[in-house]
Image (cartoon, rainbow, N blue to C red):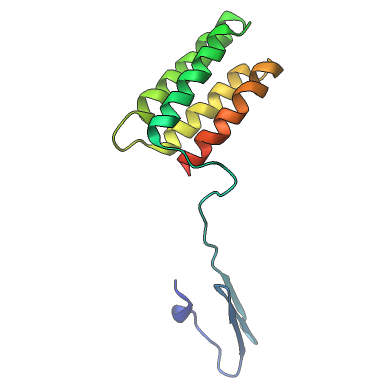
Length: 128
């Protein structure tokens, strides 16, 4: 519903600004429209750079002292994310979901998480 579609009660005060509109009076209606903006807290990288970072994360996990089940799970999710990231039109939400699973698989290893977190942050800039 756009701001112009909002029913206005006759005699009511209308407050507009920054995509907000409020109809004050009997049968009051309040509407707030939120717009998302691209992330600016992360460095913007290319798709190719994101794939390279995913490979670096895989190398770190391979070298980490993790239980075999955690390492296998993390690598599986990471490989899945990497395959998707290489596609001409990757589903970034799918990549993001698999990266979250990687972190969950390795969360018990503090050092590894500390090392891969900056790389995940860079990839987050690409994911948007």
